[in-house]
Length: 272
DNA sequence: CCACAACCCTGAGGGC
DNA sequence: TGCCCTCAGGGTTGTG
Image (cartoon, rainbow, N blue to C red; front, side, top):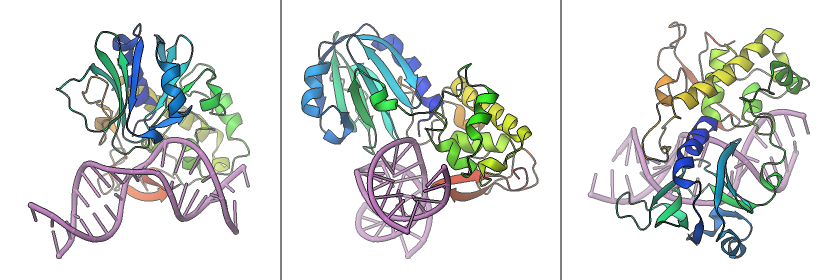
């Protein structure tokens, strides 16, 4: 499930093969993969535009074209990569949107679960407006984090998953950050002490930065644009480790519960 | 403001 | 081998 580190890794991997290329055609076989504008308008507007740059905002891949922004959200099982046009190798039956590029290449959006979406807009706020601060930016200080937490009574794990509260954190890194901060995921946000707020601020940034260093977590579907796997999953303390011994204290087994309709992993001994 | 559930989807994995 | 069932979950929407 691509979160901030996975999306950042995809963005970095796409710069070299994509920047400078021009979109010459568009194909799709699943209209619901196209969020906005309507599929009829999308093709006529995107064709002829050249890729200027690629960046990330929250969990969105932002491809800067000369007139518009092409945004892609991978949701659960989305992949975005450049391949040789009509390549026989790397057969991928889940490609639902393709952008033909100059030089006989194509940008493919593949998504087995069909949750992901592509967007074309000249105003990024149409898509990402209202999303919270980027946790790895310098302007996201512990003071900012604390200020945003004040008055919030939500369960802390739910709040971390809320993109309007903070950008890019998903289920895996929320569990990992809470574990390393020794905070129980069910705690209400306004119950956190100043010390715990500082700890959580630090571990949220640390697990995301480490995730990027390891080029993302290849759980189930995620792959880097070159098709290889990331290594982040090898460094998890709690995610997917329910029933196994806690790597932090060794005194308990990792438990799994459900918070905000998400599988939630934690150590009942370490996290209070 | 908050909790909860349905919804969008289909592959993977377990039980039999 | 294959059928049925459950699970995985990011974000949106609706209800209470």
